[in-house]
Length: 407
Image (cartoon, rainbow, N blue to C red; front, side):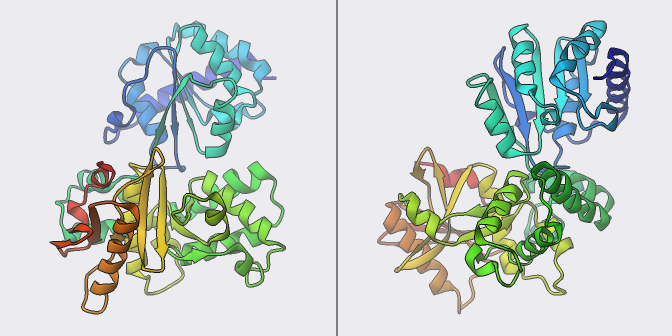
C-alpha cells in the first residue's frame, strides 16, 4: 500500500517532467474524436510515441490534467486498493482529464477506470500489450472504449520528421532507418538494441514468467533474420532447441502481443486451413530489423516487403497472404470480413520477376473477384489491363494503402 502523499508527489513530478519536454511532432489526429464517457485507449509497441501522443493531448488543457505513469519504480506494488489515494491526488489538483501511462501495471485497473468514467472524468490510457488490454477491456469496459493503435512513424511522418522529400531515395532511407522517433533523432543504434531487449524482458519474460530466456532469444533472433518468410513451429523446434512446437506457438503469440512481430495467415474462409498452413512473419519496424540483423548484407527484397506490409497494417488490422495453385500474392487486406484488392511487393519488376509477380496478383484478383490489383515497387510505375482487371504498378512513395480497401 502506497501513501497518498507519495502518489501525489510522484504524479506532480511526472507531470512537470512531461510538460517540460519538447512536445515533438504532433500526431493528435491519430486519436480522432472520443465521445464523452468513453475511455481513449492508445496501444502499440514501446517507444513508438504513445506517451508523447498523450503528452500532446495534455498540453491542450494542462491545468485540468492529471498524469500518472504506472511503470515508475516509485509506484511499484500499486494495487487497486490504492485507488482511493489516487483519487485524493486527483482531487487535490482539481483535474478533469486523467492520463494513465502503461496502466496495465496495476491489477484491476479496468474497474478503477470504469469508476472514473462514471464519475464524469475524461480518461486516456496507454498500454504495450495487446492481449492484456483486449481481455480487460472486454470485461468491465465493454462498449466504453475507443481504440487507437499507434505505430512507429509511417512514411509521411518520417519525411516530415527528417525534413526530406518523397521519392525513391527517401524510401530507401526509410527502409533502412525505420520510424522509431528517438532513433531517427539520434542515429544511435544502441537505442534500438536496448528497445528490443526491453520488449523481450519486460513484455514477454517477466509478464509471462518465462524461464527459458536463452531459447526465447534464439526464437526472436531467428524471426529477425527471416522476416517476410513462412515459418512453421514444427520445423523450428529442433534447430532452435526448443522443447515443443506448442511452446514456440505460445511464445510467438507473446511476441505478437508485445507488438514486436506479426504472424500473417494464409487467406482462406476456413479457420482450419489458416491454422494448418505456415504463417509469414513481419517485424514492427524495418529499422529495428536492420540494426538487429546479423547479416552483413540484409535482404532488401524481404525488408521492402516488410515495409509494404506495415503500410497496409496501419490501415487494416487483418492482412493475409494468398497462395493457390495458380499463383502467389503477398497481401490480401481484409476489412469487415471482406477482402480488399491484392497487393504484391517487389523492389523492381525485372525481366526475371515480372511475369511471376503479375501472374500472382492476377490469380488473387480472379479468386477474390477484385477488378484492381497492386504491385508496389521502389521506383517502377505503370498500369496494365488484363481480363481480370487493372494491375496498378506504383512506387512506394505514391502508394496509398487505404485505396486497396475501396469497394
